[in-house]
Length: 254
Image (spheres, one colour):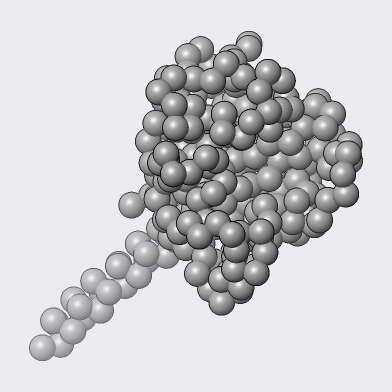
């Protein structure tokens, strides 16, 4: 009996140790540290591959992406010098681009750059359906904006790094316009973390009383499917201003 008890305790210890290591591996800042910022653009370093990262943009083709509710690719998005960028041809947000695949639990890493007056964002948990005109009708948005040069007054939940119309950023670590920033989004079950340049700007737990109150009392009160989906597409937003994106990498969790 004693041997069985010892064996059981050892087994439990191993499980707990493995579980703790697994949680550390999914720590947002640990995930942030896995990205090799010195590697060739739009490629995966050996260490990144070993950690389970995949590439969502090869810098050459639009493979893996398409226009929201479109079979093709909207012409307000182009690839220039290995970078996804928007033009000023179309300011309609129904011309956002989305991934070909849906994702549930993951870390998304990318580099972005703004110009004067940029307004864009990364929208996630997006549902693609003809009943929706815009990705933001269903998916939360990691806001990217040059608030210093935006012509209209902005609320705190509209500035760069915010979870748009929900949670304002805790700090403003984005670099000046024209410089590259590193963004990471971690969706781990109901826990969402938004990071800019290694600084956590937003963290929240979906479906909490706080989340439900914000979701039902503000802008999204008139969008019944906002935040409804736990699995969905990832979208880069077109807002009629120019933004740049590259080094788009993703790591899925079980």
